[in-house]
Length: 384
Image (tube, rainbow, N blue to C red; front, side, top):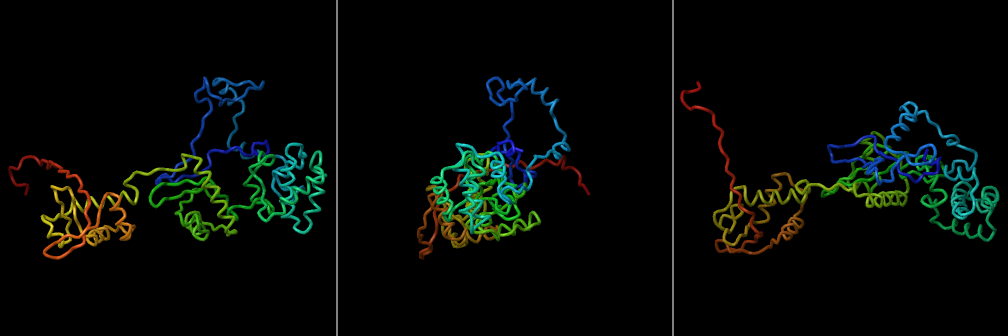
């Protein structure tokens, strides 16, 4: 409907039909009409074109409200297949039917040329002359047609979907089903609305045919991994497309995501991999059996020099503790880097006459916790 009305660039909300709330997924934010009603510019129009007050809007609602069944039955006349630009983008079909006027003729003819290269690869150069005469009002002079034809002849030719005049009548979902349309990012699937759960590593959500799909970074970079995720979560497998086309679509989604602050979901520190690592480090240094002197470091225990405020331990003992707790995200070099991030340092200590390689880090604050035992009433008399 938006494409038929000439508002093809308008976003339609909400974009999802389902959300994975338990995994941190969030939907689109909605801008409601009549917010800040006294000064806002979001209002309905009365029949005479003036702005409606909030109370008048209620009356418009009562007059024009549609049931879900009535909305489903709405049809856009002429939105189906047509002999005009057969299997081509619907935006070009609408424009050619009405005639492309001055101000949009060069871009319009360029996009017609892209269609002709797809539909008539052997004769498109002669076809573009005919289309110029039939669908542009008035037709472009021959020198300008030749300039447009040279632009189309480049190898990287593609529809200029974001430029006038075709952007106003853009219908991406329908266009992707056309043989000579823009082509789906994944054949048989409409992908949109990329979101990022900013953990470490990040988790991505993408709407595929309106349903949220949970992905890792590998699945965004690799079509085969993406297809596997579709099979496991959505029970269908989209067909593969050219690698360059896939990368172009993902790059576009990433750009759209960066422009939408709500699409990047920040996580609590303790939910991140680094947050979990430092929690385990504190538990290892403070809450397990600690060495009473530095010699007990050889017994796989951390030792804290309370006067200097420094804790010492062997890296292999800490790694064994991480493995015991099923933390396998960091290899030795990554663990060392995380320790350096908190001013840790690898040194050699003399223990019982031998040189021992240990790590020293600033000690964690001691936190003595007082726990009051529960009272179970009178202790007089044996319960059994």
